[in-house]
Length: 131
Image (cartoon, rainbow, N blue to C red; front, side):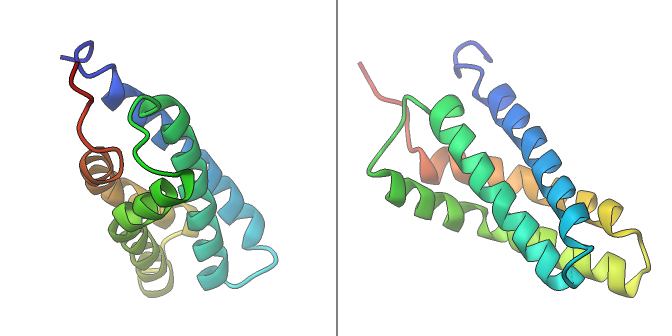
């Protein structure tokens, strides 16, 4: 199955793992200069752009439907629910439950991952080409 899918699930997971590093690393950096609300939003957006770029070139490189800008916009729409989940969980667990911000952020990231894969595969990059 993995071979038939072009190893897309594994590639998507690898890209997602790199996005976790981007998100967590930037959140840790930004928190020293900005409030949690802004630091969280900036780190989430940076990881979205990083993940889109890697998925567009590597995971779904053979499925580039439309312009780069159109794909990027569709990707943002596709991951909006996951990003919102990440953000709300980060704020709720940190500000209301007193959890460390990096752990709370990781919980939010993990909750959004499954939704993001399903929506991205079908909505952003569409069906595989038929020969």
